[in-house]
Length: 291
Image (tube, rainbow, N blue to C red; front, side, top):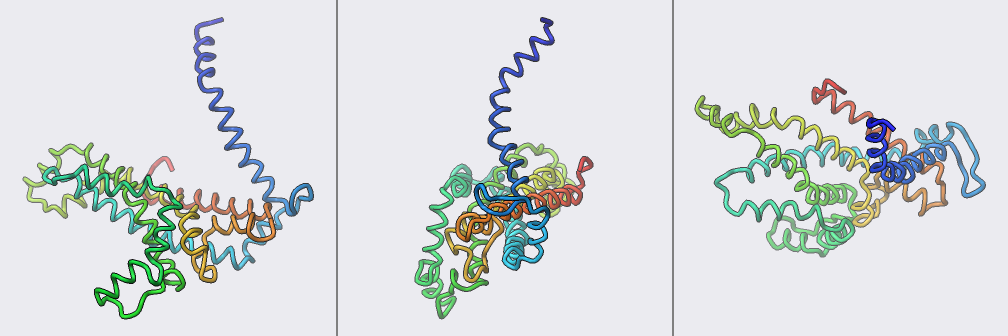
């Protein structure tokens, strides 16, 4: 056996188990879900219906509502989170700031908390008689408690606050690592030339962090399109589907309503299509020449 062949076999021996596991638990279910999206029925009674499930999407009022809700979160929460994470990372990158380790840990800590646990805590905090309303009324900011959970508008606001609180620190870590890799002499030269802090931020920091901003934008978009835990545990999609997301609708189709796994698979592939389309748009807007 030649050296080249032995080297190839040795390499495959290290990765073959991982390849088999990835195919068995990732690609195979995806292929089966795609096939299932063209079927209807349950169990052994499932049969092919062609494009009927996909045609049904455009006539399904509940699905359209879930898409609208999800895009509200996407268009409002993601920009707020990215701007906030970028601003915090710049503050925490200041060499003169004391207790930087404490602040970094405190802001990142929500990312490692249990999704269910923090969602339940938020549900109690924003309840009609919860801590948030108690503070607002005590400070005379509002005269009557805000219906954070039961009002359609405020329920969306609650979800946006929750996911912003959890994921801002996650994006902050990426920006902070990027800032620490920027040569300080660049900022020093800018200061000598008379550039203000704001000018340095928009002319140096933002351009040099552009690849990281693009990455966090795409990952945040994917995460928002798959949003489930917060809505399920805080509002359960209510009131009246006002906070229902696409992922929760998939869950309802599979386990809450009369089981319709074929249509649920179709809805899940709609998320895939949205992710692909939005990722391509973001790459184009971000100026990635390989997109």
